[in-house]
Image 1 (cartoon, rainbow, N blue to C red):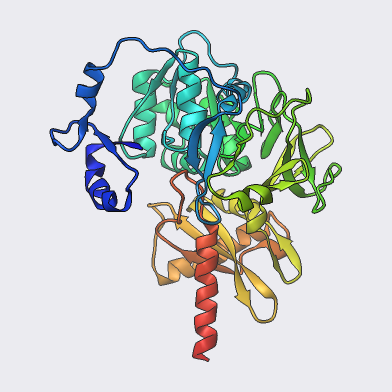
Image 2 (image 1 turned 120 degrees about the horizontal axis):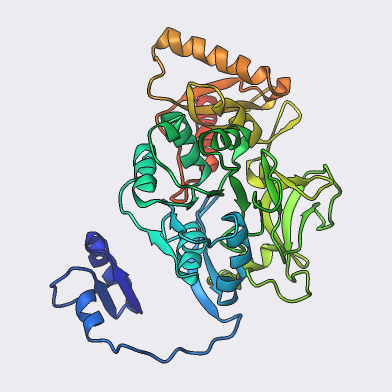
Length: 432
């Protein structure tokens, strides 16, 4: 086994070596240590050409771990076919990439599916320029970088877009941008961000839905079919996607169910983007399927025109006072308030109603704080939601926090907040 590491990670590697008996070689960047292989030295001594190895479509290509949105990350083994199978969705989500002069950038880390399969590999496949940066993401830096390098295409997850929307509402006044396509995925974009992108960039954001286990399933391509604010889009060419009930049967328009991908594409061949299974987890691999359908764990409804509308993770749905609650719609509503930078909605246990709706909110930096001001803002936010959603959806409790728990891929870890509320309720009950 071989590991390639950045110098900043050497301390971690040294600590891990005693526990990794199969690790024989460590290749490090910018190192003079005798016990490690220097990257530049190894590269200089390698032959200028090599004989590629013929592979089958279902041979393993990449072992990449899921983001751990609702639990521990699992290693997903991705087949060779996925590298080509991703391209129709990538091309469509980037308004028919590539075009003359296209330059790509995304803050998505190349160590996870979003950065690797939605940015780096497809851009390199087409032989186009992709910008790399180690800088920590900030809205101002993102705008400056895109302007400086003439970025035309990007993948920005909804959390990043929300931060950019709040930090620089009118970016074209300050930055000479050349953007022609923005793809967003990982969470629901929501109509607030959708409209801001339209106003700020004169671009319709192409929302995309996919997973580490099966990428680029559903999405938009504003160049060739009209996007609808808040919609995930339509199945990308080739895929058989349906909204399914608990028995694995397709549901009709307007019915909420779990999004599933059929093992076979519309031509009857194995869908090329589906993973081969979880690494050393045959039980979890079997549980991912319901008959011939790979189940995503995400809820949606499909309208009569074939557009899918995201309704949240199946794990994130909860009941409060007998009503079924999905957090995405409430979070999207809260973010429309000028004081809210980001929000996450979870259940908090309640003896009478089972659960109450609770919102954890990150406020914008300029929002005035203080005991009385916070109390007034809570009432204003509750009224804000009441005025736009059903009466049972407004958050009965609101807590302001500095930052939401996030995965490295920019997804909100609602399971962490749910566990926090459960532990608080358990502690209160024990104290009584």
